[in-house]
Figure 1: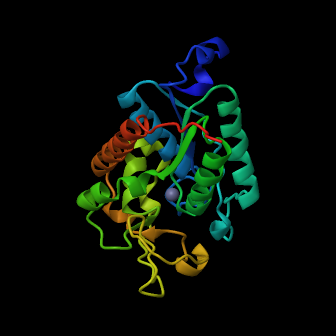
Figure 2 (figure 1 turned 180 degrees about the vertical axis):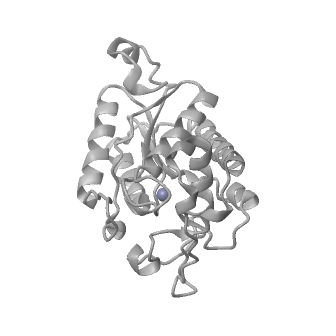
Length: 259
Ligand SMILES: [Zn+2]
């Protein structure tokens, strides 16, 4: 179910104990010369709707589109919210859902730059609504990292940003918005063994990295390895990984506040 398509009485009839509310988060930022600015929000919304179809009793909220993208601002077209703006926006959306009886709310992030704010929001909103609702945040490609690594062909660094993974998924979802003729392969040097530019890589270290310093075109990875067929496999794996988590999250207790 897509929230924006329901009527107010239909939403009022949802079972608050059972219904999962998914809020897709993404970004409006450069994705090289071959993919559109809205890529992250398009993909995270599509992963949410596919996982919701499997789970049932799930409502997918309209994505707020914009995210936290200061590291992309040297490329034309990128739009960033301030960290305080994004956290305020999500806080207000979740607060509205909880005020109307929402009990299980999942932030589904599809943009690396939002990650630390999603962690922060999961913690602050979880505390604010403790005893009334359960809030969790996931980044869908991290949830599906093992599956993505099984399907990918690129070396580490090949699925960073607008690389093999995202380009394949967009060729599956919206081939009309991808121009593979314009795709450019860049394996960036992360600059330190403690850092990675790969979507499925994990680093214990946080630091600011401006994408214009990492790649002249804004691409981090190898879109030349992308295909629609591979994109379907990536997408199915990502939706399945999110669905598996939703099955678990739906069972998490909502603690009762004790004095
Ligand atoms: Zn992206």
